[in-house]
Length: 110
Image (cartoon, rainbow, N blue to C red; front, side):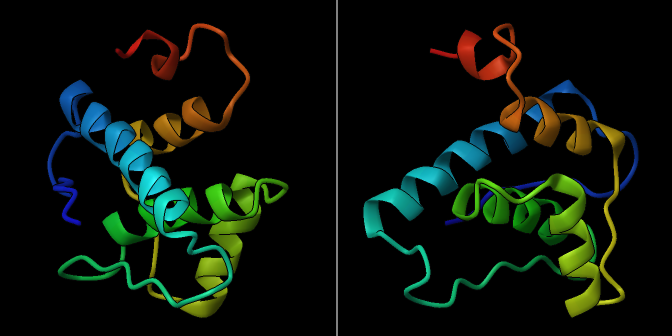
């Protein structure tokens, strides 16, 4: 699975939508192949510090729904200290996807 995410320059609405749809695709992949706690899942980007961090946070929240966003970031930082989150828009997208807002993007997508 390839989810093209930008990690440089200004992250715009289209980038956030790509990320959002990527989270949905990953959720479907995990559900379809029942990957929870069964097999390792490799997530990577060229540098392994930002795009993969953001997607891994989303995956941790999908697999462990009681996990907090902050807890997921802390776990990743502990495992890979050079990892960091980049782009407030990606962080907002994660908050939006996993939040309880009835007007969130997921409810508006067909």
